[in-house]
Length: 592
Image (tube, rainbow, N blue to C red; front, side, top):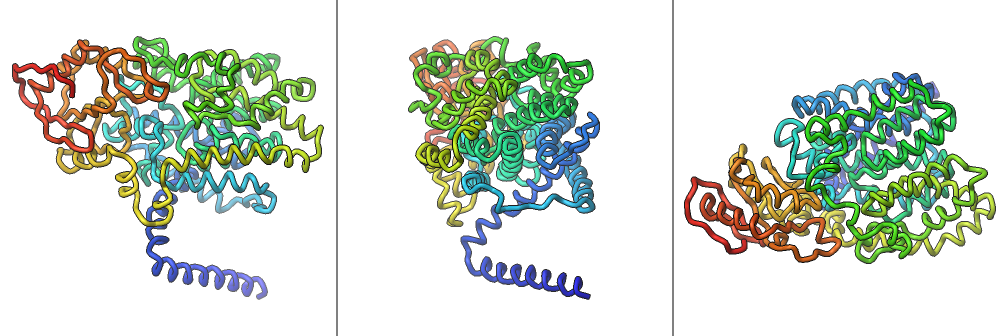
């Protein structure tokens, strides 16, 4: 009787809250607008995260791991979901969403029967609450970060438009779309870009949980407040997921759960090439424990995308080792000289790549933690020469910096009282937060969060490609095939497209010069003159990413094609759209 009365009181509170919320939202239009914009993506993200949990639990059972904590299962499962989604997408992307929904339903049924661990919000450090809140705000804003627009979400979006996962040879970054990007296929189909970002927010929370388990709150704070990571914590980028899998591999191996560690390592290398140095370091440090079974597990979970790229291009790490590969090694000059100059602490050319103060300081302290945390330090230090040689930015060295920094934070905590640690860290954390706020403010999303505009209006206000893309959606047939030149932010384009990725000028120039326009068939060609240059004038650090720079010969071939086999149908907002027509013999050589 008492229990029934207690349940009725609970239901009354829930019903009252729902009724009052309904009245409030119905009367306050901005809240209703934002809620409607977020509701469907949130539901889609929950489905994807449930599917990831199901895949993770299954994977850990297959490798005979006993501990299947939610955070660990989610990290492993998100990558496994991506691998399975990629295999299905080779046949058709239509198979991906039903698979995710079915697995999510099974996992929901399992969670409904199993007791969940108690959630204790008061145990969360206030600084972590700040970082998590900021990540959530960034996650519910429409997709607008450059890498998401260019390839992290644009490539899975392109595969959806083509109906299956295909090679996109003019975009070198399409070969870098691996497990985490393929896991976004279901989210994009069910709820669009915000759904994918919210799913990655779930991964972010899992990474925070793993870091806290390894080193405690201050280790998690040091990593969560690193500007280069904090800025992207609510975006559908790879760095958080990869770092979490690598640290999970270390954690499991240190607890003698070697099979689960091998599974996490395999998943990590299936997500990004920069996980390979960590794998090599782990194999060296743990070489005495290395047997045939862990190696087989790593290969089973990690090989898919390398085999895919090998079949497509002949290089398992495409676009590397191929002609016209993007020159990432010299992206912002020598990484070794940049290390001496302090570019990784703060570089005014790329402010969002800053590692800030706390993490580099912890890294230096970690070098003195050799005796207490030998494996962590060794795993980090062994990677650094490789990462500094091949990595174009600070985020790509984070897998080497983080393990040593975690050891450093634990050493500092052992030497100093926690209150003193908080006092010393106060100003560095504050200025790092200012840098993060400064960067995120440039995306101008306050009006969207205030419910004054919807996603389409926000993108139309902040991105000049919105208007020509909208024209294409309204004035071209569904089967149109678009070539994009001088513009690589293609996520919002709703027709099949071929476009370059970052740093792909040599690839596009070689394709134009070899007569690619005569071999391929396009219905329309979009040219963005502001990002199109003829000649070999030096480009700035940021310009290298987006500018299409072609030699005069390739430019002349493009102009002849546009003059003789295309007609201009749109000129507005700095964009030109040509419709391809029957050939005409009249050449032209003027710039677009």
